[in-house]
Image (cartoon, rainbow, N blue to C red; front, side, top):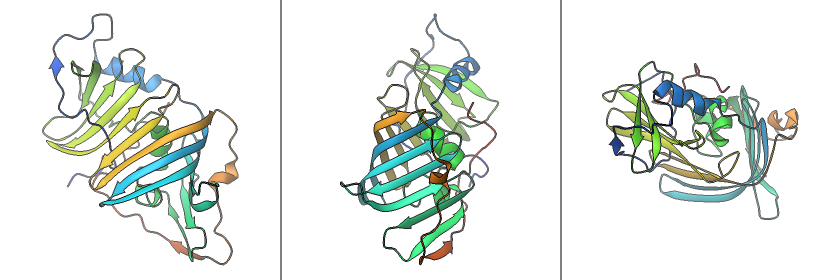
Length: 264
């Protein structure tokens, strides 16, 4: 099993691409140039508002409204709420530690903010340093020296492939119009491990679709305010009085995060 790469991400139906040899003549001609332009697109520093979660996990469906607060580079709070905005459950991280509990529950979960713990409320197994920018349109990208540039004639997108086809590799689909990342797929040789797709939106995507083994998740952002100040206390929640504080372990996942590439 592969280790030391990247946790599972997921959701793109772009799979097998039809490549044409000729790239657009009025655009960049190298993978480094296309990827650099995509990663240089500015992200908002904060995002706050409402979202909707739809998820199928191990055959079970979840659907819930969320209150979302994101502050780059790595702070996230998500509250599952009722239609009247009463809290059902909450997860928060300041980038290092996480806290999660349910209203009326007996236990308050705490621990390091690793992918396994971050996915306990919203089943997207990314570290805080990956989840915060991923929700705003920038997925994790493998830091590999081997890069190839192609053109997907079916979708009219640049296709940057990182790594060898025979091993762990990643495909990144990028719009030639504004160099926005449209989606990405992670492979272990020919096996599709996970993917992310972005749909709609302006400065940030409206919907993130994440797919991995036994997991199919979409997070749709609604009524989101960008670049407003975010209260640091929102990401450092304390366990409510009377709840049993339970330290949660970080389970080793088959694909682990690669932190060498940072969000600009």
